[in-house]
Image 1 (cartoon, rainbow, N blue to C red):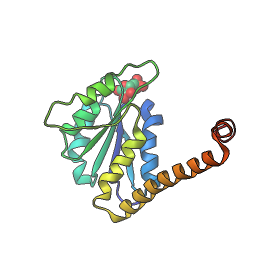
Image 2: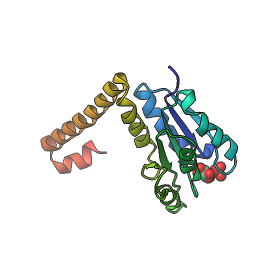
Image 3: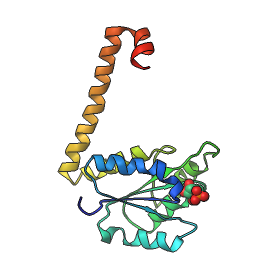
Length: 173
Ligand code: RP5
C-alpha cells in the first residue's frame, strides 16, 4: 500500500478494539492508514509533534479517538490545518463526557464529531473527503454505498416474500 493518507490516533491501546474499525473500513476501501497510540495528557509532546508534522508526512485526514475528557481530537486539530474527525470512546461505565467535550470545541478550530464509538463512520467520512481528490477512492466509496442500498432492497424483498413473522423467527435468527 502507498503512503498513509489517513492517520488514526487514539489515547490508549485500550481504544484499539474500537478504533481498529476505522482502519479496517479504510483498508477495505483501498486507503492506506497509519495507526498510532498518542495520549494528549501522557505524551503531549508527541501529540504536538504528530499534529505539526502530519501534513508534511502526506497525511490528509486525521481520525482521533479518546475517552474520558478526550483532549486528543481537539488538541490535535489545534496543531494542524488538516481535517480532524473525533471518535468519542464510550465504555459501559462511562458517561457522555467524551462526546460532549469534543462537540464543545470553541468556534475557530472545527472538529467533525462522530457518535460514541463511531470509528467505522469516521473511516467512511475520511474516505468521503479523500474521494473528492482521488477517483479510485471515489469509485470504491460509491460501490460501498451502492451495496448498502442493494442489501436493503434484497432484505425488503425477502420480507415481502416470507412475511414479517417468518422473517423475524427465521431469517433474523
Ligand atoms: C483516555 O483514557 C484513552 O483514550 C482511553 O479511552 C481512556 C483510558 O485509558 P487507559 O487507562 O485504558 O490507558 O485517555
